Image (cartoon, rainbow, N blue to C red; front, side, top):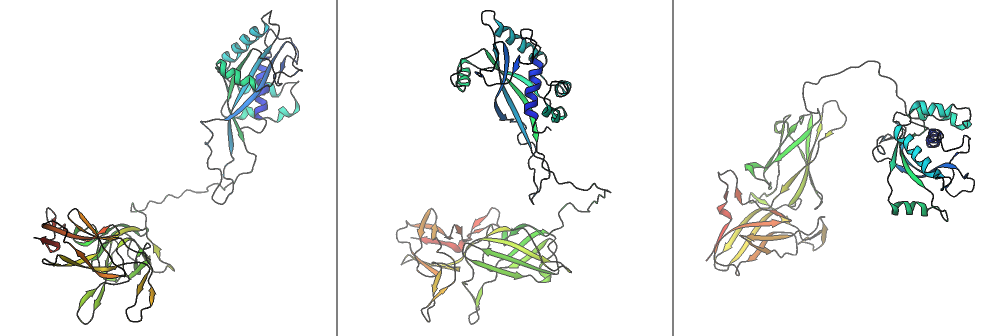
Amino acid sequence: MSNHLAIATVTKVLGKLLSGNPVLPSNDNAVTNLRPGDPQIPELALNIYLYQVTPNTALRNEDLPTRGSDGRVVRRPQAALDLFYLLTFFGAEEDLEPQRMLADAIRVLHDQPILTRENIIAAVTAQDAPTWLGESDLAEQVELVKFTLVPLDLEELSKLWSVFFETKYTLSVVYKASVVLIESDRPEKSTLPVLTRDVTVLPYSVVPLPTLESVQPPKKQPRAALSDTLTITGHHLDGETVKVILENRHQDVRHEFDIDNEDYTAETIKVVLSEAWDDSSGTPVAPEDWAVGVYTVWAEVKLQGEASARITNALSMLLAPRITIAFGSETLILTVGCSPKVRSGPYVVDPEDQEDVDLGGIRQRVSLLLGDREIPAHFDEWTDHLVFDLAELNPGEYYVRLRVDGVDSLFIDYEETPPKFIETFKVTIE
């Protein structure tokens, strides 16, 4: 790496290399570093002018990141730069002095295209070197600076010289110096050396943290329904207490299950998606605290002796509507019962006091699918019964499924080989 004097040092060393041109007079003013067109340039001279600096594309991101999460410098930033020099040759045109100087300069840089450390040290320690040059550390840079001739066509050369306003064109050539690495002088974070090395080999290949790998509905179904028992697999799932959380943020639904000891092991957790029951009839009732849709599933495992539980990663699960159907073959009216209830919006009307009760959630998109036909459902309140008129359907047999927010009810038996449609959900229109 180099300090802030690196660019100026490259310019000075380049001038030192080209000062031995046989056409130039043997004085200190023969090689200049002035802007082309400057009246101080002698009539016979070689002018070296740095006109452009660009980031080096290969090394510009070499040192990222340079700071830690707390903002402290962990590694000194560096700027990788390419330098572009315009070499201009002044002299008597009738004696071809500019051309002779040009040819010798190209010879020197082609013969010695790299700035060696010896070249830099010689230029820095020369008796006529400016005082500031002695503080340069370009010679310590790992990457050596290399000069490359840049071919410019007439249009590019014209654009370059148009930058120097009202300056007449003079025979010139462009060289690129690459790469110059300028390092920050900001102090970096220093760490203590390692006193001893202790390598521990764990007897297992997995991270010893509770982790979920899959959520499996029963009977090989791709979706779960209320009253199903989920099988959650993973590793390190056993602890003093285990809790499973299912959350549907879209409908503002959240359920927490405290798992009994007999329902979990280190690799599996069993969760029953309970639904409400009518105590008088002993039949299930569509609950209002569940909603069809996508649920996020995770577990909280508390180990003995630890103050807080360890939280697993999260997986997704689809909760499908569980349906029953009643079809009137004469009226062609199909009544579909579904659990949980479908939602008409964030409010539900209490039939006893006619007051709005805020239960959260948003209106669900519900439709009935029969073969390739889709019939939208019409409902104005949260309900577990939907009525559809099938009078416009052609005669035939149809398998019924209810789609709620893109999730279809279960109507295929995947335990059969091959899978079959469940006959319970078939209606016949004559």
